Length: 208
Image 1 (cartoon, rainbow, N blue to C red):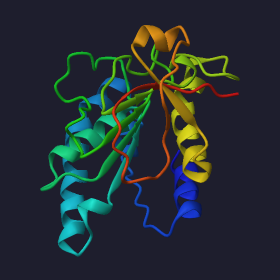
Image 2 (image 1 turned 180 degrees about the vertical axis):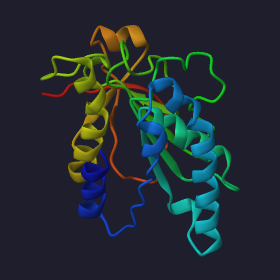
Image 3 (image 1 turned 90 degrees about the horizontal axis):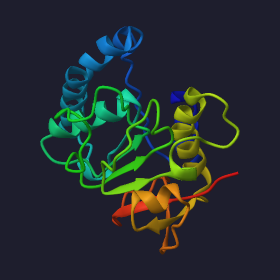
C-alpha cells in the first residue's frame, strides 16, 4: 500500500509524503492492533501539529489510511489543533468497530471521503464520511476470489485515481440502490488528490 500510494502521489504532484510505521502493533493479532488505534492516532495528530509549528499548513494536509489505518487517521484528526483539509479512508476496518466511539467520523477533517471495497468481511458497511464510495457495490471486487483481495482494492483504486482521476461514480439514493446497481445520479470522482472536494453523498462506480 505505502509504495503504491507514495508513487502515485509523487507522480501526480510535487508533494511531501510521510508514511507512518506502526508495524510493531499492526503485526500482532487483530485485537491487539485495534486496541492501539487511538494511541497511534493521537501520536500522528500531535506530529501533524508539530509539522504545522515548523511552517506546514493544515489546509495542505491530505491524510490517508487503509483498514485499521482509516480509523487511525480519524483519531489523528481529533488531536490536531485545527482540522486537516482532507481525510481519505480506504476500506475502513469493520470487525469490532460497530458502535465504537473511536471509529472514523466525518467530523475528523474538513472533508472525509471513504472508499468501501469489502463490506461483508473486513470492511465497514455503513457510510462514515461526507462522501462514501462503494465501487462495484462495495463487497466483492472484479478479479478477486478471496476477501482480502477485495479489501486491498481500496488502496489500489486510490492509487489509480490519484494518477489518472478516471473513476467517476454516480450518486445513489440509498445503500439498497448501491447493492442493486441502481445509481444514476450526477457523477463525482472517487479518490484522487483534490484537496478542494466538497460534495457529500453515497456513490457507486463500476470497474473492470
